[in-house]
Length: 293
Ligand SMILES: Nc1nc2c(ncn2[C@@H]2O[C@H](COP(=O)(O)OP(=O)(O)OP(=O)(O)O)[C@@H](O)[C@H]2O)c(=O)[nH]1
Image 1 (cartoon, rainbow, N blue to C red):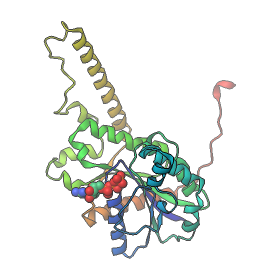
Image 2 (image 1 turned 135 degrees about the vertical axis):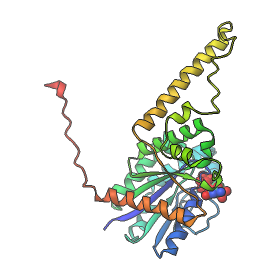
Image 3 (image 1 turned 90 degrees about the vertical axis):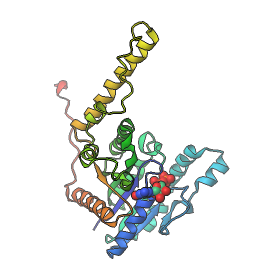
Image 4 (image 1 turned 60 degrees about the horizontal axis):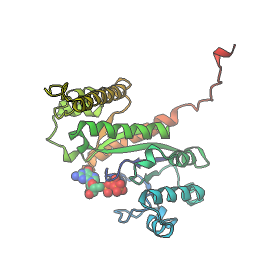
């Protein structure tokens, strides 16, 4: 039998630890066992004591002090150290049975999900090694991002970057929905949940389309700036359209204080894990270069 787990990720302050706690509480209420793994080497206070805490292996504070590194370099060092000492995770996780949901609480440094190839190695170890955990990534983005539409699409791209890098079942979650309740009409909210590209085109706060400036032709600097603005606009819209066309990113809603909302998100995570488990493992395809004949 396989083990099951979820990797809770997202930018700093997105609500990852709060979601982990709400999830643990919900699982406890439903008499479902869970196993909590803290992988944030800077995390301090926990509502629930982790079963595994990376700080027992290495802490960010020590690394910064001993190695003279900053918080980002220190975090990368901690994860490289973890990858060199994977028994720290493997030994206790081998004992965890399939009844448990293993919850991995991740740090918020965005570099980890975008351009440092550390997490793929960790995920590969957890999912494909002797542990063979069926996992789903839960990527949290703060719902207040929807107030600033370009920021929302930038956040959506960070979620996509994690999806592409990790190649594992993945759900995206707009966290802290209580903070935007009443501020966004239901109809508008739907457009954010499925990342509708037209959100950029009809953004009421759009500032770059200053084509009506009467001095634009007379002032070459102003003209160049406006041209750059226009081409950036077109580029932004093209990227948003790509996300929209391929239905690449859609979001679930989460209010961590509302147990029904937590339960609903959990059921999506469960489904994503089970759907993945049901898939036949694919044989790698033969590479046939048709131009070589
Ligand atoms: N209103 C509201 N606040 C929330 C919710 N979830 C988290 N918060 C608050 O948002 C802040 C950050 O939450 P954390 O859970 O620490 O976020 P995190 O992503 O774990 O943060 P880092 O580990 O620092 O990246 C805290 O003040 C939480 O109380 C929510 O659903 N609603």
